[in-house]
Amino acid sequence: MPTAARKRPRNEDRIFTALADPSRRAIFESLTRGEAAVNDLTSRFQISQPAVSQHLAVLKDAGLVDRRKDGRRVIYRVEPRGLKPLIDWIAYYRAFWTEHVQRLEDLLDSMPDDAPDAPDASTRPR
Image (tube, rainbow, N blue to C red; front, side, top):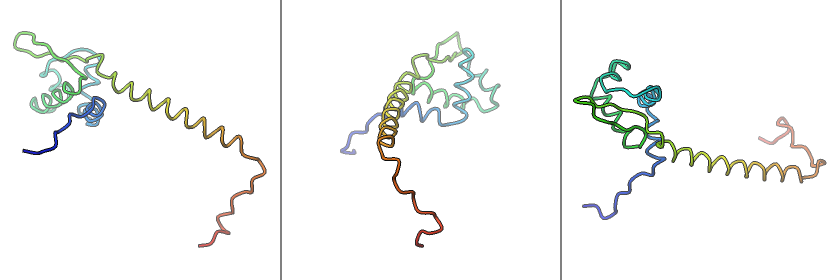
């Protein structure tokens, strides 16, 4: 038995992993247009039912889709709150880079304009 506890991946890690696969992305995009049963998805993408089921399990584990029973059929649909961790992650880094780029621009603007030009590439030592 390993001594270190195995950590569960963060939500955005599971989302990135789930959407990294082109087949899963296509299945997810298909479900954004409406719910569908596994057999419907199998016929749309011409991949095996077990493969579609595995892709849906990964999407469900990432919180991107939800399922419901309709008799013997299992119907999948997009979980609207599933992308929130990813949206929050993007918002954080958008603010981070906006601030840092602005600081760089401020620094460059504060530098004197009469700074010597960089040497020409042909005059640099080799």
